[in-house]
Length: 298
Image (cartoon, rainbow, N blue to C red; front, side, top):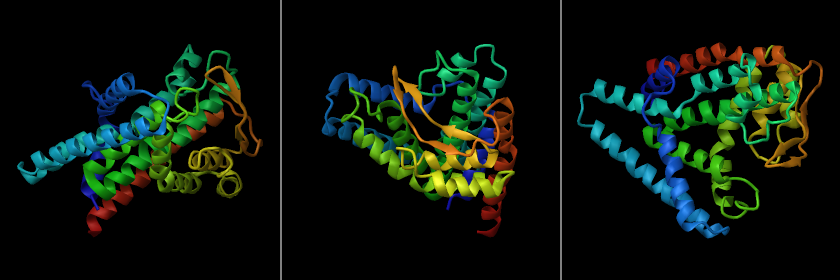
């Protein structure tokens, strides 16, 4: 278990957020775009080759970095590895990006940078609903899942997870272009997020003001979405806030029907989004407490 590395990386993310240099995920995205431009064919095999190629390059790069850091003094090596690993965590960026919906003069535009759904004709309620779903789902994808793999496998673990998640976010869609090409990436992402999504949902339940409704909604609605993972943190968030999330939304110009998660006790509005975002401090305190305890009890 890499408790020291995970604790330092989490702290670096909270303190510094995104660094000014090109993000490793952007480099992964460049590779995906280049591979797709050269080898695209809407078949499973080329999509699987893309996944295997990026996974191989990511592991080679991350293990090389670990090997290079091994020649440094232990403390310096830990600091360098934690700094690099922190780029795979996104608590500060996620919180700030979703919180911007509360203050932006162009909330639809701000939301368009966060979601794949169409935002142009969204109502105010739709904007807050999408923001809440993004916050809940990406607490898993952007925080708990990468931290989980960092804790278990060090820098190669978090790097591998980010490669898998980046591929899914770019090509893992059931559109005409990616139905087969992106299928392998989507399935690998489903496997990688299976445990973290459920850990995130349990964390949300523990931190929710209304734990009974949060647990009830998680139990009843967590498996209702097409994704085998996304519904769990979203359902827990909906139940904890006493709101209904999910429902029909427009993607790539087409309305997609989705089940409703939660209980429509309270409106989906600015207050609901503010309450959800207020979980940040409790999540940070809980995560850091567990990591520090792991360091002390090793």
